[in-house]
Every structure is written in C-alpha cells, then in structure tokens.
Length: 162
Ligand SMILES: [Zn+2]
Image 1 (tube, rainbow, N blue to C red):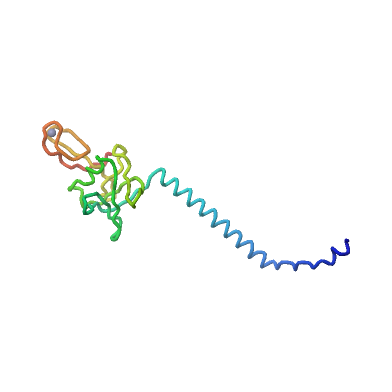
Image 2: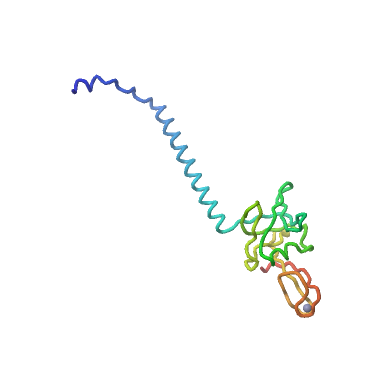
C-alpha cells in the first residue's frame, strides 16, 4: 500500500517565478473586485445624497429648462413647480448655473425640492441664489412674478445668501 503511494507520479514543483505570477494575478483580480465594490458603494452614496451638475441654462423646444453641460450635451431639468418657474425665468437664460438633485428616467435631472435651495447662479466663482425683490415694499420673494403687496413686477436679485 505504502509502496504504491510512493510510485504515484509526483507533480513537478512549481517554479517560484510562476508561483509569484499566479499570486500577482490573484491579487489583481482581488483588487479589481474591491475597486468595483467601492465604486458601487460610492454610486449608491452619490444617489442618496444627490449629485450636482453645472452648465448654461437653456430651454428645450417645448419650453422645459435644461442645462448645457457640454457643447453636445443638454440635460433637461425637472422639479417642483416653483423650481421650474424660476429656471424658466427669461432673465436667467444663458447664465451659468449649478443644480443639485439626481438623474431620473429618460436622462432628465430631477432638481431637489425648492425649499432645499438646490440651484444657484455661478458668477466669478461664487454661488448666487435667486431671489426677487420689490424695492417699493421691501419684500423679498423666491419665485418670479408681481409683488404680493403693490402688484408691481419684482426685480431679479442674485445674492450669496441662500
Ligand atoms: Zn411691492
């Protein structure tokens, strides 16, 4: 019995270099796997806390607000009614803006709720928040339109204060 065991062909010893190569490959695969997992985790976290995109404010042919994020990429913006009211204000068209939210179906970008101050104008490296001011009544509002007091059209005023 023992004798037979000794007769079994022995596997040739692995060359140390080959062994190292095998180890390196294995390590590479492990690192790739870890990287992928981290990427997934990062994406999930990103979706949860929201993403920010920047570009020039434009409008689609059917009147929806959109950000030109690169010469060949226009991202249509969606959001609540106040957000859309401001983002379609003619006075903001062509301005560089940042918006916070998340990508939704159809490649649209859903801007976070209006009260969270999820959009701003970018000017000289500063974030400026959109407000509307009636100088007659000293009343500030955050959507375009007429003053609730004197019924005059309010003026667009960009401020660093959210
Ligand atoms: Zn007024």
